[in-house]
Length: 376
Ligand code: AOF
Ligand code: ZN
Image (cartoon, helix red, strand yellow):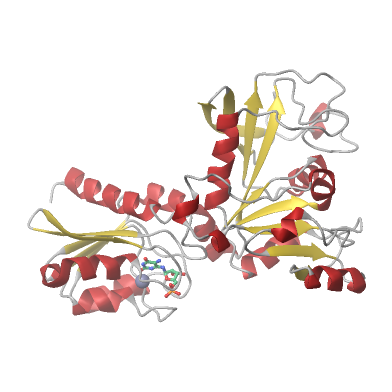
């Protein structure tokens, strides 16, 4: 078949996969198109964990027409019994003659076995069509499957002069309405929102998705989980974050059992971790825990203390900074608390990977720079 036609079918499978952007957690977003004699005879996408996988939906729609069809899938069909039976078996049983997958499933339970099952049943397979796009759509899932840790991106808002709040802490609102709506879209796709206790004590945020246009997509209780790093369990039981639908996790150190118990009674899931050298929860251990809890993408919405610590530990995969066209003056607060950073050679370098205008603000996306370069 014409390679560009094949790419179009795979692009369609990816667009279908995107329909699960906000709802498939902890599963990947996956789409599938079945094509026979140049016609799309079935389409499907994975909507939520426990529900049918993309291929099974597409096979259901296609019915008998699936026999002899080519399946374009944005992820290798699974080979294992999870919450649902293996898709590879379903494709074989339906008599599909060829399967094109955008990428291998990095889940160690699958990792090539799905394609092998298909080949052993005499089905032609190909892998790698629009692979980069497929990988980007599931960057959190892929990272967790490969490293055991979620993908972490931190969202920050600042003025033109690099301030994130006034000296008093007042920060509402630096960004314009469109940028704030954009943040709700980012929250919606995240498995969880991570913040620090200082932010909760200062702002008492809800950290929920409240964009009316997004709510019909996922039930209220599918709100992203909220995670508070709170070494000494100072979170008040009356905090707004505990009154929202969905899960709230509080992660602290082990020696505050009475306060932890009060938080449990208020509905929080309490987790204990070891301290780092400075008596705070160890951020590496936090990421390991959140990987074990199957969080794929985590959005950090925190203040300068947690962001400073995250920058220093190098644990953030992407920094997303909304730059607002306003000046807050040199008494305002900066984005990162980095005590002791005094020489140019101590600085942290980032590389810009995308910039775009969102309403009156600029949205800048950065990756941490691996090696430090000469100039800033
Ligand atoms: C596919 N198609 O649409 C998805 C796949 O617990 P389960 O049964 O939902 O299985 C989850 C695993 O299945 C997940 O970790 C990933 O390996 C695969 N997801 N595979 O063939 C799909 N969502
Ligand atoms: Zn499957």
